[in-house]
Amino acid sequence: MRSIPQPGGCSGSTARRKGDPTVLEGPAGGAVWNAPTIDRVRGVLYVGTGNDYTDIDAPTTDAVLAIGISDGRIRWAHQLTAHDDWASGCTVGGACPQHPGEDADFAASTVLISLPSGHRVLVAAQKSGMVYGLDPDAEGRVLWTRRVGAGGVFGGIEWGMAALGSTVYVPISDSMPTRPADSPRPGLGAIDAATGKVLWWAPAAQPHCAWGPGDCRAALSQAISAIPGVIFAGSQDGHLRGYDARDGRIVWDFDTARQVPAVNAESAHGGSLDAGGPVIVAGMLFVNSGYGQFLGRGGNALLAFGLQK
Image 1: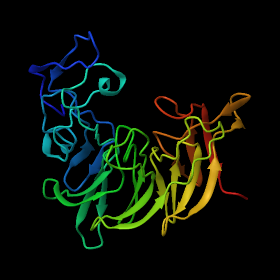
Image 2: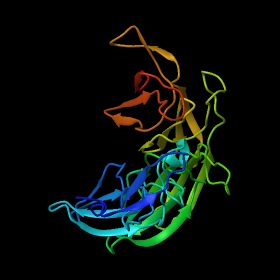
Image 3: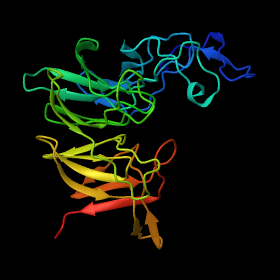
Image 4: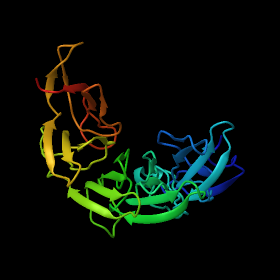
């Protein structure tokens, strides 16, 4: 299955760097960054897609797709941001579309929720800072929209949401650069999946980085995880925090950016928390610490937490 048609032309030279002869051929883009969500009722997978890489628009970029499990066909596609033409060269000085967008990928997995009313809602969240409630039984018809973050290349919702019942918990990164018109708004929000109403908002704690003030951010980029009563959210400052699911109060805080004994080496060292989030199973919580690919501080620790005895 292709998320966009086979490339059939080129968008012309759109290089920004002097002397770069690069030609961006399109359509191109529509990358799937997230794990699919299974809908057993409809027999489909839901995925969110990324932006277009060229000036040739494809209607399945920055979209939510429903893909048949049995045949791999796209049953429906709902584009939520059009003309988001962007490539990495737009920030690092290489080839870039002529009219670059804001890089508003759907990087986080969609969340399928069954409401007490019997209706269902498919929640999708974007790096633009927008969250959408879609009707999975009406080809992705938009039920509600809500802006939660400012958004940007490293902004908005990056890697993953979580849900308890009919409440969706949304982490906001908003690392720079963000949308010029809005101020960064890192934090954690709770949204009613039925209406899109924000039930509470918890601004990110002031960053405290063990490595010092350089490259120290409060962004909640890492995917979050939830158990009844508590939401676990990792920050780029290296802290893994537990938030009360009822009101967003921080009830637990552990700084992972430290040297720790290791079972397979003399020691390991944590850093920023980003990308894949905490995994909770059999009374244990596991989280990887250390991420410095684009922003933050690298490390090499996999930490395991258990209940105190």
